[in-house]
Image (cartoon, rainbow, N blue to C red; front, side):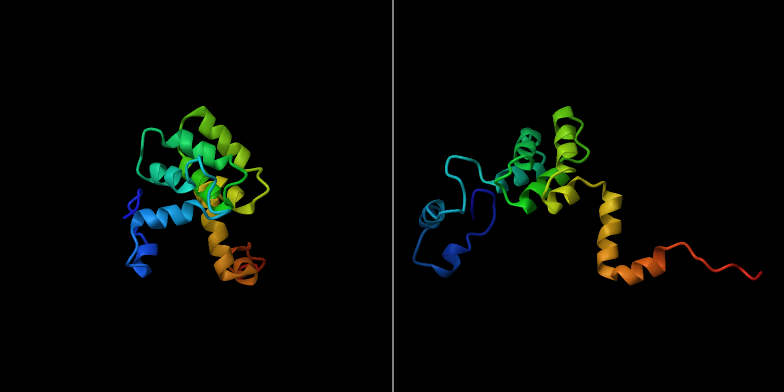
Length: 139
């Protein structure tokens, strides 16, 4: 198991190696992670487990333009409902982000559910099922 409790997939195949070996290989791969900074998975883990320092870590991740969009969007979504003013401001800024995933993370849950449903149904089905009826009743 790794620091966050996830399985060590590297040593699953490299059974003759240790977890320390796998961590060292990953740490030295270019583009995987900026050395000296916490991995975005740590902020998400703290947010999902209610850690005391989660809000600050999630805001930092949400505003990190170098982090993957999916990680930033997850951080923003985890900040929803957080009463701290700096968290609310981070959500407002995320709503204007250039990355569509980050903007999606800032949407209220009801709007994301509607968008998810509409994308599964397709544009025609959405218009057919949700558009106001133009037919008049004959009763």
